[in-house]
Length: 433
Image 1 (cartoon, rainbow, N blue to C red):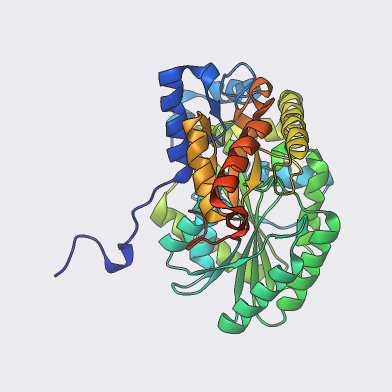
Image 2 (tube, helix red, strand yellow; image 1 turned 90 degrees about the horizontal axis):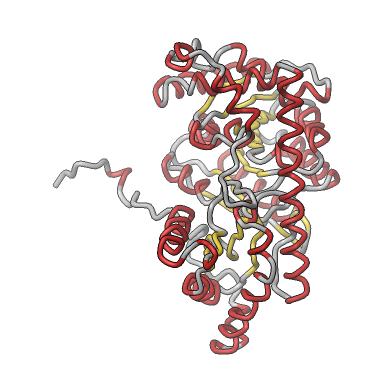
């Protein structure tokens, strides 16, 4: 008997672990007061005084956009020309990189990710993700009916190049094409940023792999504007632009994250390839998908971002304001990681960014720790391989002593369940629970 939903839509009920944890924290605050709760679930920036961070530099520019311009549809499906120019200048201007790149406006970084999967792979073809990664990557793949293979992100405290290579080679042999995700810098959920030599190994391999078939490298830079190196990081784009003709790099950018305007959902796909014919065909496919999906993007927010990107004084005002919060993020990270080291609380290698992940190799222990911490009004996000701590949302006064509190609970669980339970390495039926 036929149902309302298509067969391909079966099993699409979703429990979003981030929103679930965040809602739990909000309810606990309402019940017990803010001082009694550690909210490490929200993936958005909160200041030390508990206020939601909203950059004055951006909102001043947004308020200056005339009301009719905010109300209008964007002048192009790919975004107004001024917005496309602004994105290119934001990413390439500081490194004097003059390349022929294409920009398609998207509803946040998520729209850029989804469009790339849809326009790269046919239903049933496989996408490659890191095993420890942002949960909605898998949701996007499921929505596009694309199976996932995973490379192991870490080998000790380093990027696992051998797993990356083996996984890509296996998928290339199977389907003659590869789409692979790398989230860098400030990887979500671990806060890892790859070293130059690690990128060297990846790009050398990608060039070699492209001799066997087309390779699409999706470079997710959602948190690029909160990395410690600033514009120096952007030299990676020059290297992406020099890859072989059979490689397309899709840089997925979230302007709304950079501007602390999450709900405005403004992002972009930035296409880099020396294969102009293939790049243009991909651009047209993405524009068509946009028209049939979301149509156009928040015009007022695109105009405000463009003003900041292309006006030297406004951009300097933004950079000065942002710098203090990049510094604060580093101070929070240094506090938590130092105390985690002292308490012998295992964490994945952290370099910078919004998140640190506590490493829990046992699925059973991880879930029990997550539950017991919630009972103590400590809210983290349950991810594959551990618990994500959003230091972006926890003030320093609440971070102090937190690692020891978590380790004490973890020790109790391990002692109760036996030492072997702590070594039940990644025994999970699915990634990103």
